[in-house]
Amino acid sequence: EYDATSAKGVALLGHEVAHVQQFNTAGVLGFVIKYGWSFLKNFLTNGFDGTKAYLDIPFEKEGYAIEDRIRRDLGASGEKLCPANCSL
Image (cartoon, rainbow, N blue to C red):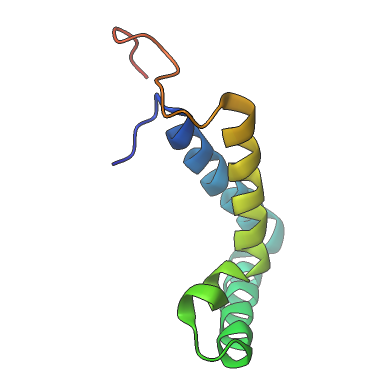
C-alpha cells in the first residue's frame, strides 16, 4: 500500500515523476513508441521474459535509479518521514 509519509512512498513518487519528465521530453508519441519498442525488443532478446523486458526499458532503468537514490538518501527503514499528526 502506498504511503506518502514513508521513504518508500516518496521514492516511488520520485520514480513516477521521472516518467513525467521523460514524457514531457519525448512527447506523447515519442514516449509511447520508445517505451513500446524497447519492451518489444527486450522481450524478444531476453527469452520472452516480460519482467526482464520491462526492467530493461531505459525509461524504467532511469526511474528505478532515481527511486533507489531517494531510498538511499532518505533511508529505507520504512519509518514515517513525518510525525503521526502530520498530513500530506
